[in-house]
Length: 163
Image (tube, rainbow, N blue to C red; front, side, top):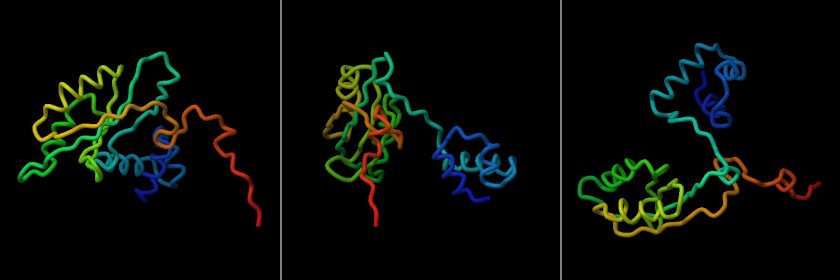
């Protein structure tokens, strides 16, 4: 069975049933289940996520990106700091990046005060962290390939081109 085809299908629709996947791939249910389980066990498939448009709810929700500058530790590089950052439940994503900061993390909270408290009380005091830059998300237009609050007619307003 072609595992890459299965991954492509699941990345487009993580809610696809094993039956639907088997039909599309022309494989048996058992083969699809076995391959899917193997991909999960190898941490190739690491989770299935729902994209929520919090702006359409009555729930207080703040998303922030925080650039974190840090000094690598001898013999461990940035891994030791990354392991500490990843343990915070407020951190939804963490990346080692190139550019003006070493890390980029995304944070979910209820209020801007919660984000500020996280940065001041938990993040900044970590040994090796030298600076932070916090950016609050003001509006989301597209998340994980899903457009948010953009009317369908605006999504493709390109003029037709003929040869």
